Length: 223
Image (cartoon, rainbow, N blue to C red; front, top):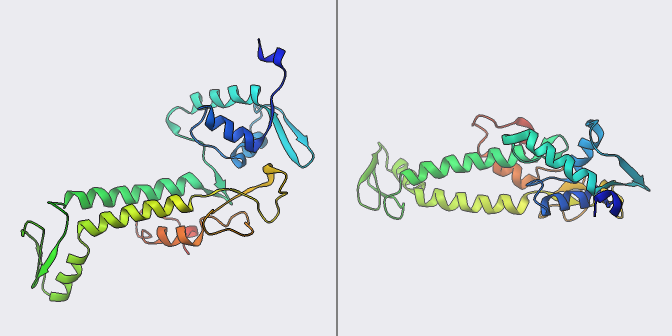
């Protein structure tokens, strides 16, 4: 039976985002990004207001996003904006820094990636000299930053980022019964009232600032 004969399948913008991902139409998208497209793209299917919420016909919006994905090609998944901050920009950039550090650390690994100081020299776990310095304290410090420790920290920071990646939450100005008014917030830090623009949360900002000297870091991310 054709879609027209079955009638419309009206869903909220939040439900639309969930179904687009569940059905494999897009890799990731939020209702806020959908709201932005509905506002800015003249080709977006009609949005119907229902009280303080908005609904759309899934049978019409699914082809819209499928066609949009094919037009975008290699541009990647939809980006969610939080108070003007593109979530994908933050996550992608931080991930690139971790990946760069990981490659550098793995290039230095012999067996377990553990170093030790011997006088003014730093030795790897094969007792090969890594570097000789002019100060005992310097050698001890370098040895403490061995590849094994760097790799552990990278793994820990990836887990931290996963815990602090934002999700839709009821905001200060949200109507709890109207998902289209929800905002993105940190599920770990912001258990109370969420205000749009609160993300990156302080934890993520502290993670980002450790790479403040690298290209691509933005001052608005600073704690």
